[in-house]
Length: 122
Image 1 (tube, one colour):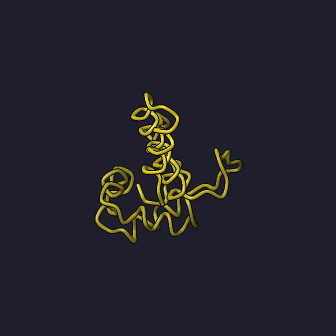
Image 2 (cartoon, one colour):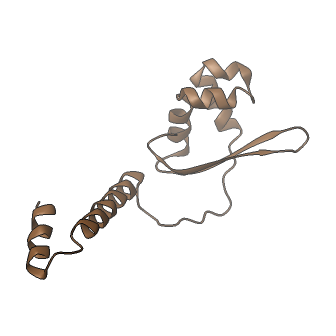
């Protein structure tokens, strides 16, 4: 996936043969996202089953993705106005704080305050 991707889903549907259903939540414009996605070798491998000629040509794959894109009539977001980078930073902070909590579990209040200041000094 791309750095803009919050999450993505691939589903193979048995409809009149097999159909690939792809949906994703991403930052930025659809055109920019699809262009970046089409430039990925993994995307070329996946969509080569849908359009074999597009496998080696990111421009053609981008056009294929754009031509087959369907705007969602309703989007349910877990959060709004938050980028992938901001989510990743928050997850990193949470992991750092959780690790600190485990390491500092046996400290007395003064030791805990000191360890906290040392760990999270700016």
